[in-house]
Amino acid sequence: MGLFAKKPAVCTVCNKEITHKHKPKREWALEGPLCTDCYMKTMEQYYSGTYKQKCAGCGKVFKITDLWEPRWQWEMEGLLCKACFDGKEVDFKQKKEFCSICGIKLSFFRYNPKNDWKVDGQICRKCWDEKKESSR
Ligand SMILES: [Zn+2]
Ligand SMILES: [Zn+2]
Ligand SMILES: [Zn+2]
Image (cartoon, rainbow, N blue to C red; front, side, top):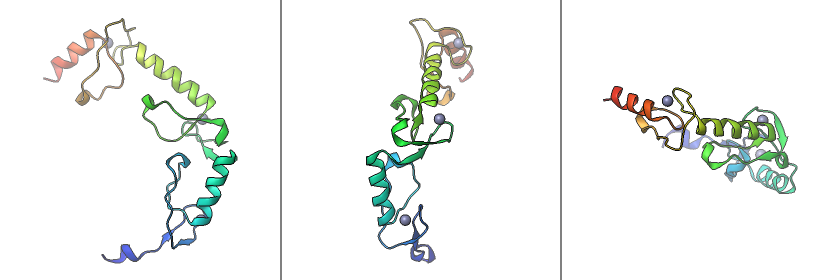
């Protein structure tokens, strides 16, 4: 194709032109592509625990060994520092225990909102009925 295909790729880390592109691993949280040098270096740092990465929550830089992998239920990318991880967990638990619309404490019976309602988390019976009524 046209010009775009001929444009040389540049390494995200060192900005050198790349002849052989490497795709960064998902957990490195880099946009990529990487040159061979940077790829190897990152890999090494990552495994020796000296790799530094931004927390996906607060944006501060931490050593990879001080970062936590978010729980899969949180549906997020990247890694979190302990503080953000704990915060998220509290957040998530609260979301699970309270109706996302009216905030009432949910009993054993809770309802999952339909996708097109664009509601995060679970809701109470009353709100579910109301939503259903108004989305008709
Ligand atoms: Zn590079
Ligand atoms: Zn953080
Ligand atoms: Zn409710």
